[in-house]
Amino acid sequence: MKKIIFAFFLISYLFVSCNQSNNTQSNSENKEIYVLAAASLTDVLTELANNYKQKTSTEIIFSFASSGALQAQIEASAPADIFFSAAQKQMNALEEKGLIDSETRKDLLENKVVLISPKNSNLNIKSFTDITNSNVKKLGLGEPKSVPVGQYSEEILSNLSILDIAKEKAVYGSDVRNVLDWVETAEVDCGIVYATDAKIAKNINIIAEAPEGTHKKVIYPISIIKSSQNKEEAKKFIEYISTDKSKEIFQNYGFTVVK
Image 1 (cartoon, rainbow, N blue to C red):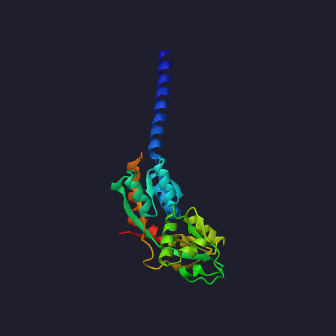
Image 2: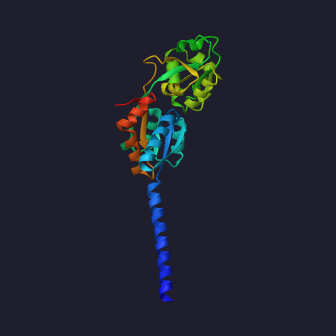
Image 3: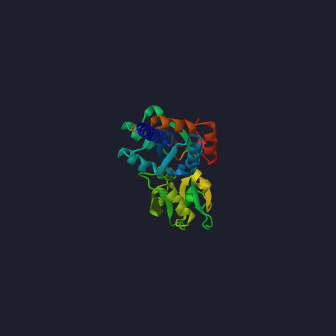
C-alpha cells in the first residue's frame, strides 16, 4: 500500500514539475515588447516585427499614432519599451524630462515631404504654391501641435509665404495616415504627407516634393523608454532593425537610412 501511495505522489510531483517547466519555458519563449511608433512606420515595422517573431518567438506589440500623441502617453507613464518618433522634437522633450534612456537613442531613418492629390483629380495643381488656387477648397494637413508632418507642413508653407491662405483651407488630421485616407477618398483636394506614405497609396497622385531648404530634415530617432521592464529585449529588437537586412526593407518602403 505504501508503495502505491509513494508511486502516486511521485507521478503527481513529476506531472506538476513538468507543467512548471513547460510554463517557464513557454514564458521565456513568448516574450513581448511594447513599441510606440509614428503612424508613418506602420507597414514597414509590421513586416519587420513578423520577421523578428519568426526568428526569436518575441511578440512585438505596437501602438501607432502621431509622435505627439505617443509622447503624451509616455509622459502619462503608459507601459512601453521603445519609442520610435517621426521627429526630433518629441524625442528631445522626453529626453529633457528624463523619460528615455539617452544612451540608447539614435537617429535611424530620414523621410521626405510631398504634396498629393486624389488619383482622378482634375484640378490643375503642379506645385505647393498652387494650393492658393481658388479651385482648391480643402487641404489635408496633420494637426501641427502633435503631428510632425503637420509641423513640417506649416514650416514649408510659411517659407513659401502661403501659410495664411493654406490655413483657411486646412482640414487637420490626427496623424499622417488620416490625411492620406482623406486624399485617397477625395475628401480633400490635396494633402501634405510623407513620401513613404504616398509610395504605398494606390489612389493618389504625387504632385511635388517639398522644395529643398523649406523645412528641417525629417529624421526618425528611436530610443528605449526609461521605465521599460524589458530593456535587454528592447535593445535586441533595435539591434535587429538596425541590421543591413532590415535597412534594405526600410529602403524598399522609401525611407533613407541615416548613416
